[in-house]
Length: 261
Image 1: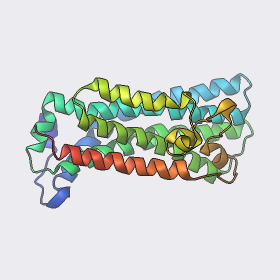
Image 2: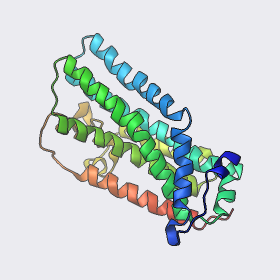
Image 3: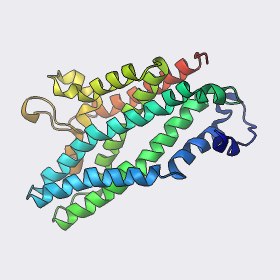
Image 4: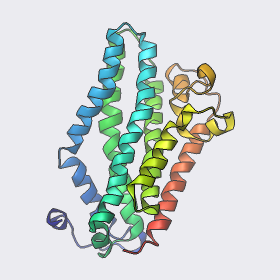
């Protein structure tokens, strides 16, 4: 705790943003002044790019290799966001750090917003940009020249999917004091695409962003259309996921504002 104290400076802000800069600085320090950032880079390069390299080495078509890359990113990255997002809230609540921090001149919305921004910006270069750039260059070596704009948009869907689960986790961590309910509910949501789904449900949840749904993949994922420069059949999953993120963030703010430490 002493390391965190040394980074704090007097806050002159008022309103909901009081203490936000101090809190964001603390959270960014935990990402960029520790080994966390390069460990995250190594993990995702090994897991995502290593898997794609293995697929290509085994003569998988480059088109299938990139779709498999996006599918794995859509399933595995949320699990990392769930674990780290849960510990960022519940870890501080259980250790008493949250009560100590919130006894200082910091508004509770700033507490949640700082964590969301720090973790969101932490995952962006380490799990999205760096592995994505290497994947794009790797595919180019194998002769697959994807439209750059479409590839960037597809990676944007990977990031949006990750933000959905990060905000969901942060919301649940403010609603429950135990890790069991938070972990259980989020993992159920991660894997619910495996059960038969109606079209309307697929259109209001993030699964179709990166995963083919329906019998034998009858509903291609949104990333497929973006990668191969095809018109999107619908933008409902994208809009719905953005709205879910906003809702989860709003509920987290509402709940933390009524929490008694």
